[in-house]
Length: 151
Image 1 (cartoon, rainbow, N blue to C red):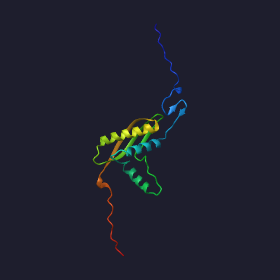
Image 2 (image 1 turned 180 degrees about the vertical axis):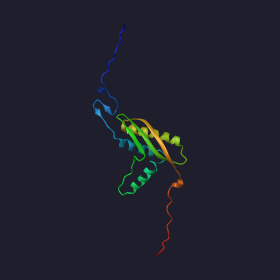
Image 3 (image 1 turned 60 degrees about the vertical axis):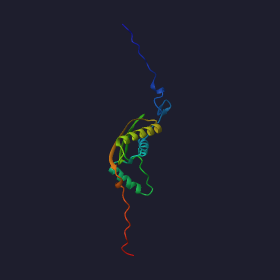
Image 4 (image 1 turned 90 degrees about the horizontal axis):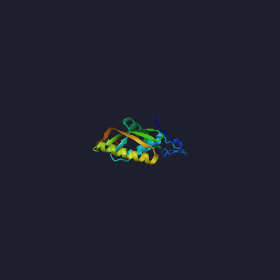
């Protein structure tokens, strides 16, 4: 009979698993933190008009008109965050004339870079959904001043 060698490894508790989980303790990052980072990183890419679907954008526009309200940086962003990994889903409106494939690639690079650099999480995927294309004529034209009917 031949004997087979069995390798016994040291407990993983004493080895460094990631920047967030160490022998000294662990760091937990909330979903909202990753959402904000991903939203800001996506907006930085040229060709992104806005984030969110139609309803989310309409509610966001109303919220921004309230005095003292802040911009929702995680609008149109949903994430799943684990102990060491994160996945990001983005809904957005692209500017007309921009290559959507190139835009999605640029968004992925920027989001992955920002999230991994700032959080230490490994981003396993960034899914981009383009809901609409913004046309220049979609911008509201300022209303022409109306003549006063009475003086």
